[in-house]
Length: 232
Image (cartoon, rainbow, N blue to C red; front, side, top):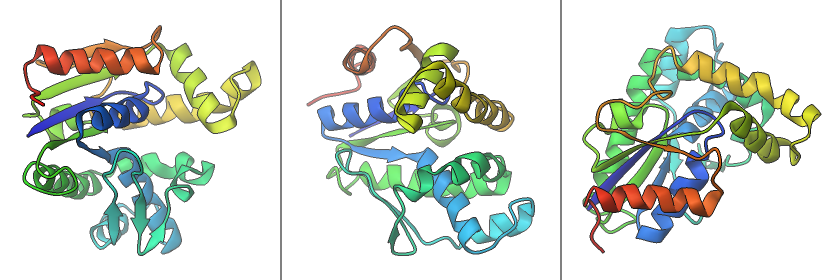
């Protein structure tokens, strides 16, 4: 069994790379950022004021959320509803930091995330082979004892270009500008409660600024192999 933890800022390629690594190694995949997005959507749908920290925390503790961990099709089911697309809307993206910076929410999310990791290291989708978990503070808070810990980063220009392509389907100046505030503001806000901009001790940095997806996946797999933490 193996746990691979991947941190990094918006647009660094965490999700795409982590899914690909999990698929290559036959592991489960956990998108912890999607959990915070789902929590935000849950609060919006249940009319919880996002500026009421206590109410948000109570609501999230009761949230009926199921995270799919198949890297080929990692679904997000909220109260029986597939919300994989709904959590990626601008409405959720612009509000998620209010939920993600709530310390009680983070504690609840950490509990749920660790439960998924523990399940995959004993049974679960992977049959006990393990998991790739990615997000904001996975290497330092959620899975500090992971077998391999990677900080996936990239230049601001590269991150904005990637997120612009993802959200707007284009990376021209107008599309990048439309994405800039959302990406940089969320990183700034989230960095007040989690460490994902610099590597902690024992965490290996992979800079994907000049790498394509396949090259970045290869770089992360190289880290895992170098640390001697994976056996087929």
